[in-house]
Length: 279
Image (cartoon, rainbow, N blue to C red; front, side, top):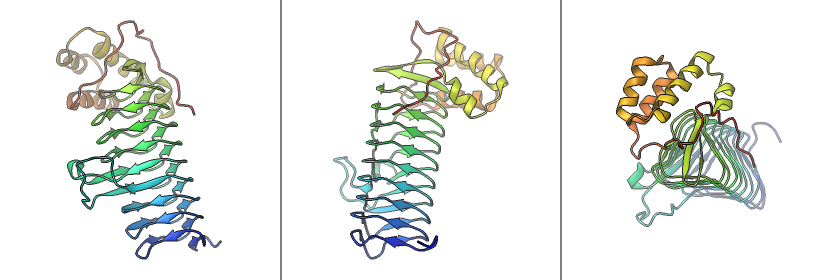
């Protein structure tokens, strides 16, 4: 097939009105609705369903039985013209579901670029996912969740609605997350606690040694110092180098709507949380 040629398998169903960019490939038994826009080079392997208003960028791959844009699982939804936006170079594995937004959440469910959503992941209505996120098998998001860039969510994890997951954080597998997870930390358990910094994630992101050292000091004050949140934040601002990462951590905590997870009393100050999500 020519790089610019659109391929539609004879056993696929592509509605009139759907817009397919150069090099798009639609495999057998796929269904593409009339309000769908698919960017150049995106592949639908087989049995993929895209329905409602779905705007997809370039170079994405949708594996069998994945879907995007279907009606949200929200009893308050009554057919409002909400939609899904998906950026570039995302990998959407088997049986992933991405639901459209609702009026109560800005009408939009959005994914950024370069994300990997492994098999059976669910992204509910009005979620906002950044870029370079990994969600391992059967991780599930309730509605209105925000995940910042570079976070890793372990398999079989459930995350409560309206929770926010910070940048470069690591959530261990089979966790239950009911409060916000600050950036750069490792959280695990049901219900989850913090277990230190996500050191491996910080190294992979090439965060400077000086900033990592500042984050370690800030983590100790914020989560192991025994002070209330306001006092601990004040101490960090007074005593710790306010690198980009430290400033983001403090701003995230101050802006948290649900409150952030806390550390277990028994965790070590040196805990590094250097695991990675696995299938």
